[in-house]
Image (cartoon, rainbow, N blue to C red):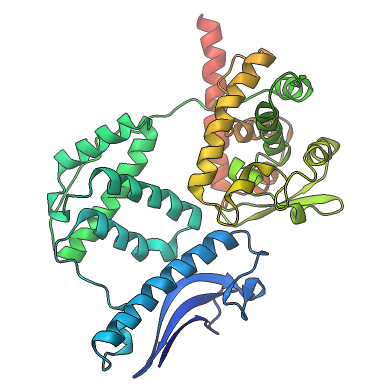
Length: 385
């Protein structure tokens, strides 16, 4: 009779194995938590090794889920020693059907089919509901409640597209709740997604940014510029991936970027520009190339990264103004800039697709098409003005 964390011998087609909670009693039953490759599993300590790009988040998930089921196991043991192993994993039906509690169960339900970074984003929406709508029940959901949620999101500074995504996710929760509680709730998404212009910098502006003397500015201003440039040099890498860039990701002549959103690994040749930035921050962190996430170790969350990026975006506006670049620069502009400039010189667009880490070439075609449309719009505006 026991409960433990267990790496199942079953192997998926992608080479990973399921990490499970195993309960042995009247029979042996399992509950899958996540999947990891053999090489990234520490069988002695029952945890994911640092070699896995998302080891911090995965270990946090494993710990959280195991503690939950371990508590249920011992609660059942205290109440009734004749309980069955399957009882440990039996979903608890909510008596009061509290909205926040139901939403939490929904996150557990979908977590196996989503990237951890995506789960963390949804978890932040859960915290939002917890702080603003913790007295509502599932049966209170209607278009009026949705409008209240939209109002709160606007008051918190969320833009139109951000609100649209959150309400779309809330609709998926409602669809699950209808099945879970045998309800017939139907809601609309009042937020409208609109196409926003994707800002980007020219090669000349990138050069200006790199060469501009920021010595009279603070260190936070300088590091914001350098991380932005590193994103651009590393094939338009996402800022979250560059912030997580580890010292051991640097090889003699290449640097490997783990894209946490897609789990793809992009290998980039070490240029002199990349080397100069790496050397500038050498020794400032025990873990990462840049020291921005050190204060959050050992458990760096998506929320931690968001707070760092928010400050970076403010500082990038200062950098742009100092350089005389009259554009609204944010960390994601580095990705747009790389894709746009690469599109002009790289004939085989499949190389751009691989560099961006897109899962399909169609995704790259759509991405580049949007960027080209913006450039055409800008050109026509100049003509008519």
